[in-house]
Image 1 (spheres, rainbow, N blue to C red):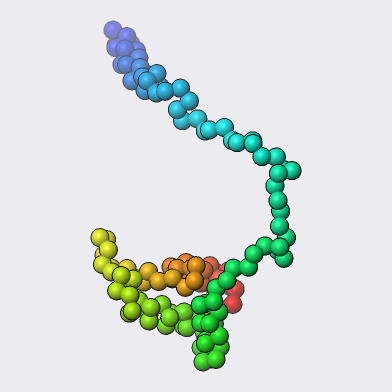
Image 2 (image 1 turned 180 degrees about the vertical axis):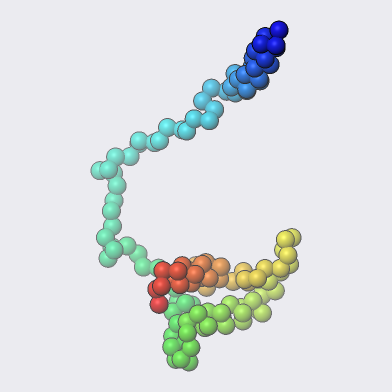
Length: 128
């Protein structure tokens, strides 16, 4: 009697686990097929010289000012970010999860947060 009760319970558990598989649409959970519409002959590879240069005039001027003042670039960027945040109250606004520690300030196409991340990566890799 006990053995058949265990089998019945096991059968119910297996049925409960298998039921969602029967209800899901076909193809659910399988990755989509990769597109093979382009061939290597359709690709264009540019050398470093042929690629467009990224223009970062603000960052270049901050770097020049730092060199002229004899201060590290890190300090010059922090000064720029703090000054920009003072002029834009939205940069340090109280968002729903609280005030931000790093102002939402952009230097050309880089945010202050991205610059902090780059600084951390440089320190970790001992790049000076």
